[in-house]
Length: 267
View 1 (cartoon, rainbow, N blue to C red):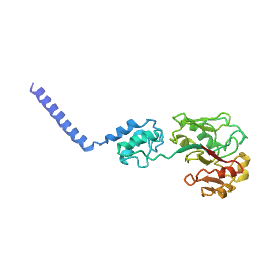
View 2: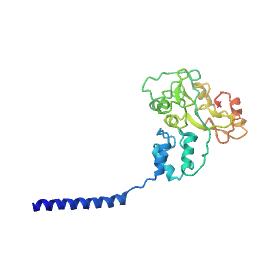
View 3: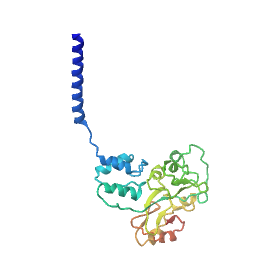
View 4: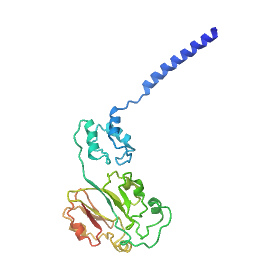
């Protein structure tokens, strides 16, 4: 009987000692989490698209709290409403909203860039880009396999069966998932001005003759656009025209003067 009582007392003592040790260890190593993080997570759309530049909505919320407010951060899918609600948690007003537009920097459709060969393998742009220049022979244009479509969580992009090129619709929230998924970087998110957006619908850096051989509407690096621009918004580098979205006011003079129609304007 004494043995049983002694054993019970020892076990109870061990239990109490373990509880005390665990309490002090938990206090020593506990991680404080600001309740604002959960408040922000509840506001966010929960898309976990990565458009904010972080690994999911909670990671974004953690960084907003660490940053003591948005201060340059934003949730693209949430738009103005979500970002304003987040800003209000930190006592701020409506955050600055810069209009944007997602553009496809390739116009090498089936007519402009006729196929010379036919690809019949894994339907992945990432895989295809490692193997071949593309059906038209252009090593810079859209491959049309739809990696961008698979990456989009908002049904904002699809491949036009007639042209073989991606089309962006009004569902786009500018999260940038399609941009990241494109192995040839032909999808871009650019600032939208009051008069719209002007962009180079080409990524070809071959010299003019070689570029035109594969695509009738390729940029040939003639620099006519650069000379016509009154705002120094257009430069030609390595055979390809580039537009500075900050300097450009979308006057469209470069669009009108482009001999190959490689510069496009959208409103």
